[in-house]
Length: 137
Ligand SMILES: [Zn+2]
Image (cartoon, rainbow, N blue to C red; front, side, top):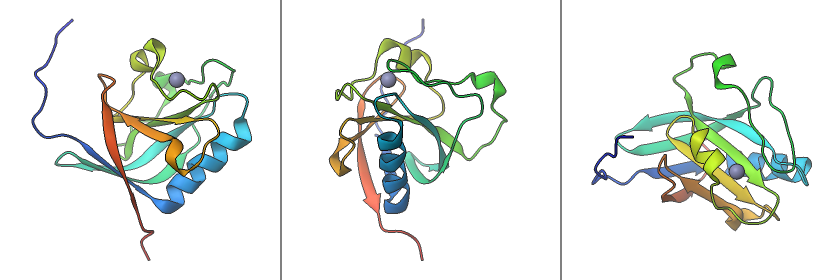
């Protein structure tokens, strides 16, 4: 395993309010199972802006892990990461989560899925700061 030096530039995550609300609603609908979605957006100079959601093909849901086979995903540069829920109420990434890391960021939403229940992690499981941006008009 190769360990990279920590980048000086900390990634920042920006999510539009609409997208945040969509994530929370989706998680509530899937409760008590985990729900998983693909995040759309762009990554530029360490800033990841998320402004859309995609329901992954062939996703499977269960109380402990929600996932999808990455090999079925079409290559799309607008896929910046994934979001999934933790019905247990603890938004800590599991070993499985880190093994299944996709893209630049992994969002985890803990039950009861309120505005402050979304957390962002990088590939190493470090917590990243999330900013909610107003919707573009
Ligand atoms: Zn998880």
